Length: 97
Image (cartoon, rainbow, N blue to C red):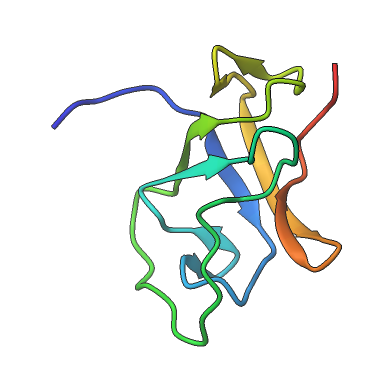
């Protein structure tokens, strides 16, 4: 197993996502963006949820080059928050540079 440092998903308020348990994301890592929009590409709508487990998800990749936290398509924020924006899951930490 390889250990890498990734910003953590400190909060997720998208409670209808399969990876959200008790307001935390329990995917191994998420991907943000489609190149322009900072949507959580890992979002999966479901009534069922994965079991609560450690560790909390990290941000594996960010495809939104216009974000001030993006360095070579990886997130350099300390942590991010994910929440609903216009009906879909978005990185709320996104900041256009």
